[in-house]
Image 1 (tube, one colour):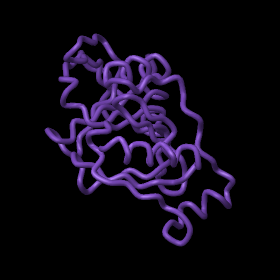
Image 2 (cartoon, rainbow, N blue to C red):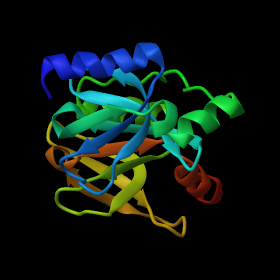
Image 3 (cartoon, rainbow, N blue to C red):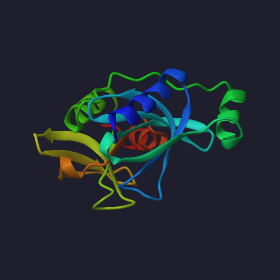
Image 4 (cartoon, rainbow, N blue to C red):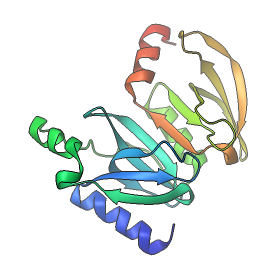
Length: 179
């Protein structure tokens, strides 16, 4: 993404505008929500799903294909949020300057993180906690969909296209599995 386009996207943060972001790695899975943080490498979005805000999605600048402000008649969601009085939640203490810093800060602030490697494994995410982080890899102690912990699994940081945290799905798994 060019620096001009990035500056325009940052401007939606100041205006509290709802956006839809299309990504290169997930062509059929746009992200809707409010941009609440922009770092050197990552963008943080307060995610909108089914007329409510559902946690945070962090994506790479380089993965943004295009984005669009959703306002007025273009977005029923914008109108529903306004009626409900729902506003974006301010950025938590998350560092957006690199995937490594994002993972560390999200793991420190929230009980579970979800990583996506959409270019390699579309429609797949892994949920867990960081066991070990190096310059090139992250090992997660994974939590499967039935809330059972597994042994650490290593992933290449370069393959990560998206990181989610503080979502209803993650919170539900955490309630059942705990530590």
